[in-house]
Amino acid sequence: MSALRAEFKGGSAAVSMSQLNRGGGNVPLGGARNSNIPTSDSNLSFSKYRNTSKTVSVTYEIIGAGGTGGFGVTDGGEEHRGTFGSSGGSSTIKNGSTTLVTAAGGAGGENCDLPRGSAGQKGYSSHYGAGGAGGARNASGKSPATKSYGAGGGGGGGDEGSFYDSGGCAGDGGRAGTRKTGSFTVSYDTQITLTIGTKGSTNTTGFDGARGANGYGKLTWDAKTYTRTSTGTGTIN
Image (cartoon, rainbow, N blue to C red; front, side):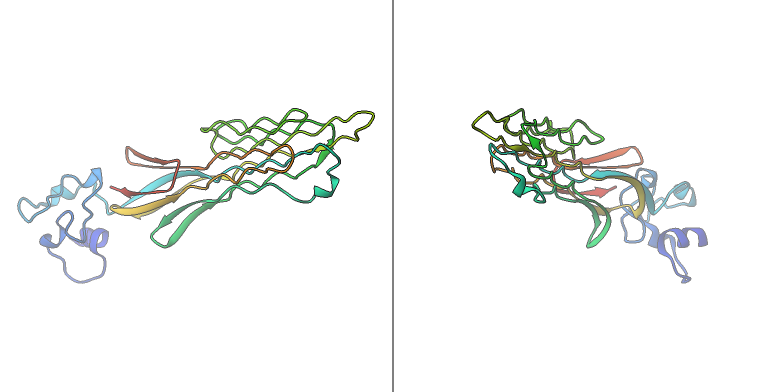
């Protein structure tokens, strides 16, 4: 009985079987390994608690959104260096108000960082797919595929120029979001919120730097999986 008290109730006070009903406050309602525990006093026995647990280990993977590519321009543009496209939003895992994991979004690409007449730089790839293509000369960059979670957007192209035109410089690609993996332990029936980072805004000066891809999150426990491509809350049961 002391082992059941330590697992489900804690403390040193005496505990009765009637305090160990599934869903009764001490024993979680959820959890496949707890499914044999009755929800009422009837048919309670020690054998029902074999291989049961109040807590479970949850494995996670999460990535922040990709950054926006830097822009390119038709004429000059060196004065824009040192400015950047918008960063992607961070993704987080929370248990109530407690943040368990944060995965930062990718930084935006530098505006007009590449030489005049260059094509824009490709966005940085993530674990899930390639970054967006850089813009050709005199063209905007491209966004990555939707399922290339966390990948960066392509930089805008520059202008080659001519005898009467000095040309313009091109933009860097946006960086990929940070990806994190690991595990944490919570009680069954805990509600976990995945806040998924969103891609930054389009960089609209000259030849646009493209937006990156949104973030992504995935939780796995027992034989269950909970995935999110937008913010949501799931119950570990």
